[in-house]
Structure formats: C-alpha cells, structure tokens
Image (cartoon, rainbow, N blue to C red; front, side):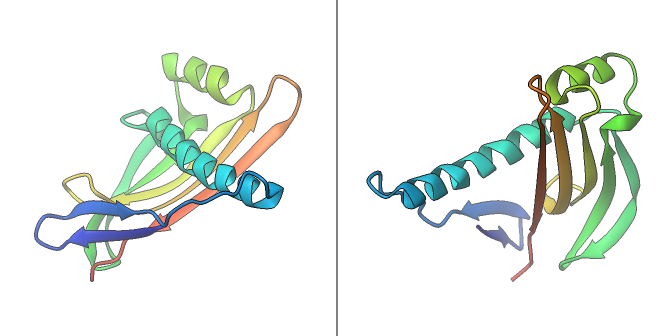
Length: 136
C-alpha cells in the first residue's frame, strides 16, 4: 500500500495496488482474500478504540516530516462500559496495544498496533499492523 499526502492540506490518499486472485489457482485466490482481510481487520481495529479512554496522549513529535501528536493505545486500561465492549469483541484476555501518531487535524502519520483476540473455541488470533506516511 502506498500512502501519499497533499503537503498543503495533509489529507491522506490511499493507493492500493490491484488485488488479483485467480480462482482456479488456490494460492493466488488465498493471497487475494488475505490482502482484503488485512484491510478490513485494520479498519475494525481502529474503529474499536477511536475516541476511547484506552488512548492516552503522550506528547508531540516531529515524525516522517510531520508535526504529530503521539497517542498510546492500550485497551487493558479501559474502565466501565469500554471494558465490557473489549471483552465482548476481543474475548476475555484479548487486547489492542500500540502507538498512533496523528497531525493536529487528525490525519494519521504512523501507527503500530498489536491485536490479540481470544476466540470462543479457545483459539488465540494475533495480528500486527504497522504503517507510515511520509511527506514527499
């Protein structure tokens, strides 16, 4: 994935390389589905913690050519209703932890996020997301 920004507006534009899978080729088809799944997994991970008490403003930094605000994300520090939401969504013991850098306008500059889901069947699913945006 290539992320480009307009220097005057700091508005991110996402360019996705074409995802192509050949149905008759099992490996090709599986690869295409995995790429699509990664995009939706990341989106749902961010939507779960957006504007929550699990995010803590840590300070400001100059990163990748941008002045950014750094937030730590840790669902284990949630309280009240959020605790129940995370338990229902991520399973008992599940969590999201990481760091997100955004401009003052809220445009993401960089993120590193680990997600662990504890499934009802006893399985544990671990995902790691990392992306950065650079000024041209």
